[in-house]
Length: 130
Image (cartoon, rainbow, N blue to C red; front, top):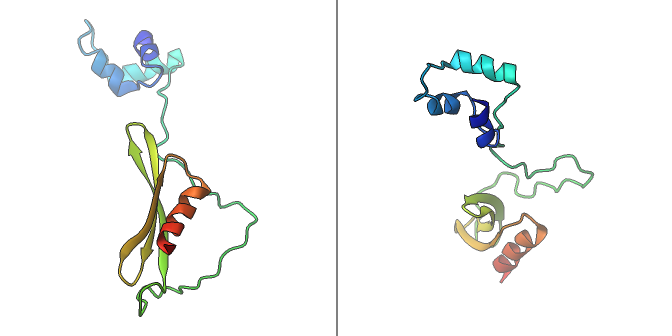
């Protein structure tokens, strides 16, 4: 059991170990594996499920709410909505910044980057302005 856990670089938990040990000559139930892992000091390494990208603890001023929840402007180019989302790819995270015109509901600017940095947002806004 300890060897299987080390071979998995510490990522295997009770369920995976039980699955790998199903062909072993003796039965290993979840309760027994849990007890044995605790005695051996083994613990499954948990991976974070999301990446925190917001820093709410800052001294910057808060922008005024100019839109005031009016999501139906009377003409184009009156209200734009920016958004940033992240996409998991085989090569890592890819960040997508978009600018949406609220009147037409069309994306008028966008930018992709493997890093969440200021130029990502500036590029999307420059595309929207052009």
